[in-house]
Image (cartoon, rainbow over all chains, first blue to last red; front, side):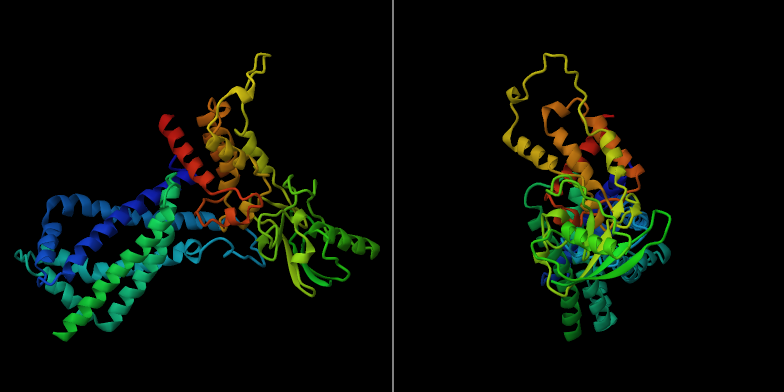
Length: 220
Length: 248
């Protein structure tokens, strides 16, 4: 089954749905950094996520596998689909009935991948070095200040890079959310409305967080 | 009206085709697009040139034979219409009109604008039928109660004429809309239940063997389908396929 065209799309859909769930919890946790408690709640949750063995050694590898599967299968499907039309149309109105986002998932996907590499370099790699290379002592209060520092030191260029990536993420989600459900055989109810809301609100939330920490840290 | 036609000419499947330019004067707005091509071919024959080969049969919008890609859109600019029901009043005097065959690896060009769509026949042969012994005691179909919604959805799926516009318009040359319509029209009705699982498995397998691409849910197929077949049929086929594999 998984070697059929529908099976491959099912793999894309399931890995995409898993990443959507991860993205939602990531946003919810990050939103706690906007609460004016000097990062207290954000630090508590971040410390739990960063040190709980189930999160670290079960969920984190699954997440990384999910990203790799989604990216690899996406590229593989793109290559296979490119081979299905040997002679191109001279005039092709691809936009007829199909959104830009739906026709260019590979472009938005590659931008998101580039962002993920930058994001891993910014947060995940230093975290791994801090804990498992340098074996620094546990500090439950460092996360909020590290978050502020990243955006402050990164400057306006980094904030713009993050915001542009989030816009592309929104476009990717604007097709990917409903498309994953369609590939799983679900096409009932207000899917379009939920897709639009999710693809606007989630990236907007991340953009607000990035701009908030850049501007507020700058002021202090 | 006068048209600048740019038509794909290709001698056969082996040769390399190219666009030929034709300036056609005297086109009437009440002509169908195929009648306009007939008019062009008469002119070419009178000039001792080879006419343009194109597919056509019923010219009533129900057989699915006509298969032209006109100005970048399957069956041309009028929504929900086959090429034979497209009229020249939809074009402007002096307009440049590109006419190409439906393009897909699974639809090889035979000559000019005619493509081989027998891959669709093979998909149908793989399972789009019901094996019933008509022994003389067959129940009257009208006596079998069917929910209205199921009957309507099955009928809507059955209006697919198998023209291939879905494949032609899809950026991946996917045949999912066609195959899903054929799967849906049977899976929704009691008569189609006996072969429900084997049907979807065999048809999807044949679809993949023919070299069609995977569906990326862009919706171009539904938008350019002359019969307005819904992509909800694709979701249904995905469900049917997943469930059939689970039960296997």
